Amino acid sequence: MVIWTDPSKEDLKRIYQFIARDSVYYAKEVIDKILSLSERLLIFPNGGRVVPEWEHADVREVINRFQTVEIT
Image 1 (spheres, one colour):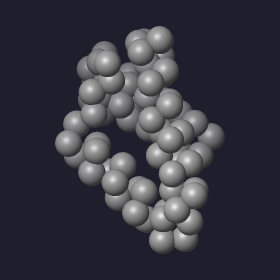
Image 2: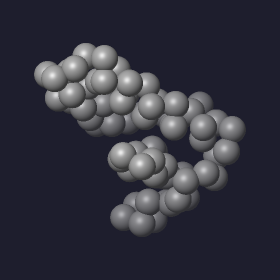
Image 3: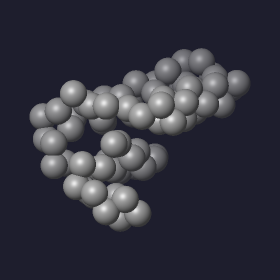
Image 4: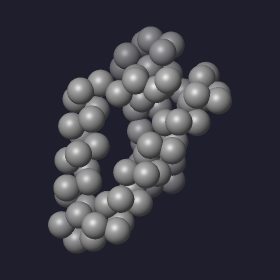
């Protein structure tokens, strides 16, 4: 299971709200993309790279062509 921290959940909410000012459709698309990238870690738990600032093997970031998503 991918566990989202409370600050991460708030970040997702703020990302959605920011994009939704212009387009609810694209806000949903971006959030869905972030969530699907995080779910890939269920299949490939060592996917992505270890976040250098955290120096902890369980904290990963998945890089996509539009954004970097840190997943803890």
